Image 1: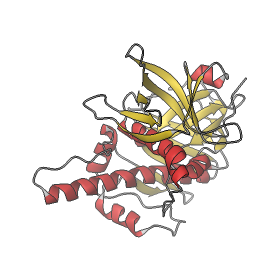
Image 2: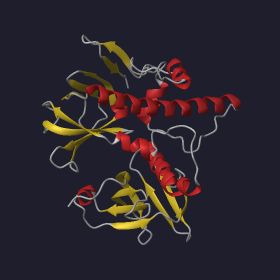
Image 3: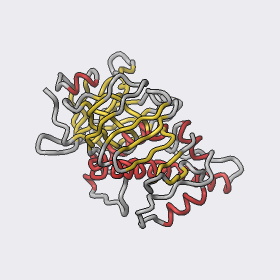
Image 4: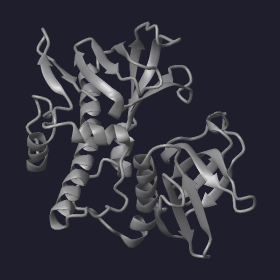
Length: 314
């Protein structure tokens, strides 16, 4: 029996440090927000399959969390800790991405601490629960046959703030494949299709993947929005680093601002950033600054029917 997904904020594999034996065990954890079913909590499963089947899990209530922060890389790379009122501390780490660890810290902080103190940010955040819920919308698509995949046909496509997922159409809890947005080379749409080219860092390897859909433009906008948000975040990190370097000959490290090698290369190798879709008139002054300062992550090319196909070189 599948578990209820309506109150899920984030889920994925992490390594959890065992206090009893002192080793890091890889487990699938689910962060659930406060709801009628209980307080904000973490559910720990043996693996993703156990979670999708509604199997046995251990639950940790997060209503007494006092602090959530990153752990020094000298202790453990890509790690973060959760501190509780009874002085207990849980240490967790991601396998390879500091950006993933930062996302866990941000979301747990928002659900457990910011909500309790009534903090309100002045601008929308792509990682906030409301916007994340919007990004979790699923689209019915038809995956065209591809030699890189063993599956094709009707499935569900989902765009989150960092990945594109394909889910089984008959059982939406079965994940078929995932592509990181930072590893896409180009993407575009027309009235009947959505298409993107994956880079060599994807689990599928390099390849062009096409989907028949009547919602290609909507999928394109969501991919563009999420990709722009990633680029904007790392552009801010880059600008902050430059300011620190200018004020001191020896650049000072920026806490909690380490990003993956792929994204660093993406930002540092660029001089301009793709603009928002042509039908959008809401580009902020900050986005224009990014567009002036960074490399073309994507280069717009006009297709025969007037739609845009964005290209990005990694």
